[in-house]
Length: 117
Image (cartoon, rainbow, N blue to C red; front, side):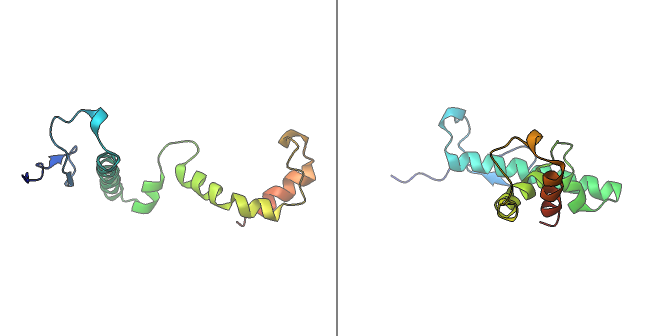
């Protein structure tokens, strides 16, 4: 016998609804359902940050990047993306040495190669 789909449950004040059966224990949520919950939270956060940017007359994209986290996730993602290219650009460095044992010239060379990436 076919049952109708579960009624949508709103997550927070989000306009997006995910069909999670009310009363479902957290331990029984599927990866898909967790994805719906996380997406709703992320979209609600972006919506609120966009409202704040508009109210403060700040560029929305700039405000979305400001999270008060250290390091900023935006910067951490960019650094993680360039690591392979940076390693190739600095192939002459001895990566087995701790940073404290690098010469001043090697550190300068490393940073100068990293900056344009």
